[in-house]
Amino acid sequence: MIGIPQAFAARYAQARAQFVGAAAVAGLALQPQVHPLCGPNGETLALDVVREGPLDAPRLLIVSSGCHGVEGLCGSGVQVFALQDGEWRAKARAQRVAVLYLHALNPYGFAHLRRVTHENVDLNRNFVDFSQPLPANPAYSALHPVLLPPEWPPSEANTQALLGLLNTHGLQALQAAITRGQYQHPDGLYFGGTAPTWSNRTLRSVLRREGARAERIAWVDLHTGLGPSGHGERIHAGRDEAQALARARRWWDGGGATPVTSTEDGSSTSAPLTGLMCNSAYDECPQAEVTALTLEFGTQPASAVLQALRADHWLHRHPEASPALAARVHAQMREAFYTDTDAWKGQVISQARQVLFQAVDGLCMA
Image 1: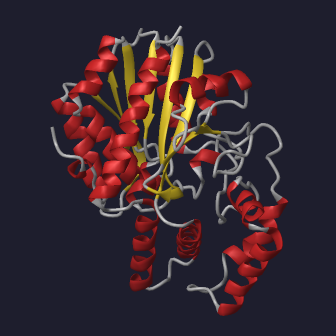
Image 2: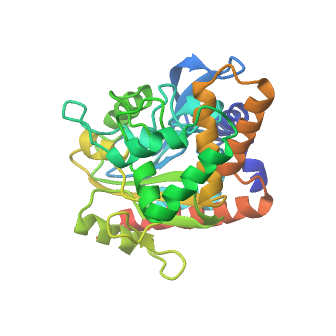
């Protein structure tokens, strides 16, 4: 078994190779869902699917990474480690829980060090009913010109304008307006899209195939970029239903430093969001009871993460930017969503491993 630091990779191609290799060593078949575009060096991009356990298993645990592209640098490490963790795999088999690993839900963003898909869409805001009027977010529209100024780095006037908005509205209101999800500015932050993305459609197809016979589904979706460095916040990601939240808290609430939080009751560091990806499990596996958790690992302060996202979207709007500036922006994104230290990686594996063990026990509760 490889050590904790070696389970992680600093770029998509290496992360994919390690995941594919770990699955092969574990004797598990790979089902690559190949993306229509290539990576920055011409490499193949794919949502790679690996399953351990029979298709007719009544209990299914989904472990997913890379919903937000660059955040897959963390999630992939968790998945690679889990595939080589003999104790963890024996636990799931003994309790007859099938495990479905979804590596790089958004492989384009992962490879290009972006949080969004090739459509410039935040995948975790893309799961809305597009046959209905899309959610409005006028508070974001007011911020859009300030968030994405004409030049980068931003001018002093732009920086002061953003600080003025922060002082006027407060951090919580500003965070809610920016991150909730918006559907009116295709080049903006947290854009939910106007149609299902490739990743949305592909994920739904996988869920229909892999979850059709499951009676109970647990879903642990791995994220980074929110909260104190190294801390894994356990955020309820299922429907806003009292019974589902109570079930998640029975399974995963460690109390103290690791409670299960909710965006709906204000206990989470995340604001309420629209178009969440876990909605797809209810749509594609309607026969199953779904219990979903976002495991969110902190990296840098929120201001630094926001600045990295602003820079990334500015660069997307300005492909003529110099290679040196582009390289700085890519490095800024990597650092905002992945902390390349052994200590941080150890914190990630320790907390994720506990959550996975608890998920298996939860699925087997009466």
